[in-house]
Length: 76
Image (cartoon, rainbow, N blue to C red; front, side, top):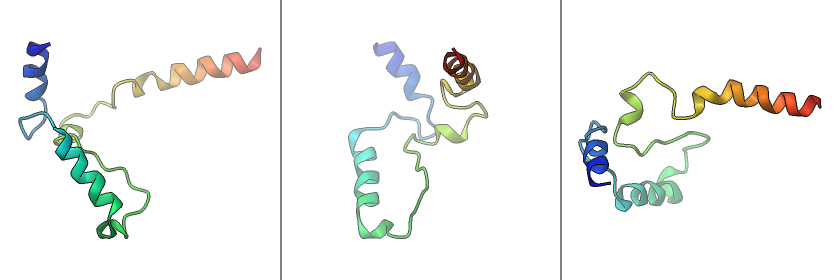
C-alpha cells in the first residue's frame, strides 16, 4: 500500500495527494454565498489530474457495453 501511495502521489500535477482540507475547502465554498452564481457545473478536486489525460474516467469506457447489457435484459 505504501508503494501505491508513493506512485499515486506523483500522478497529480500538484505533486501530492489531496487531503480532507482540499475537498473540505471546496465543499465550504460551494455551500457558501460565494458560489451563489455557480449552477450546474462539475467541479473537480483532483490536483489537476483531469487535465493531464485524454482518457475518460475509469469505467466510463465500459459504458456502451453496460448499456447494451441493460438493454438486452429489458428486451427479455
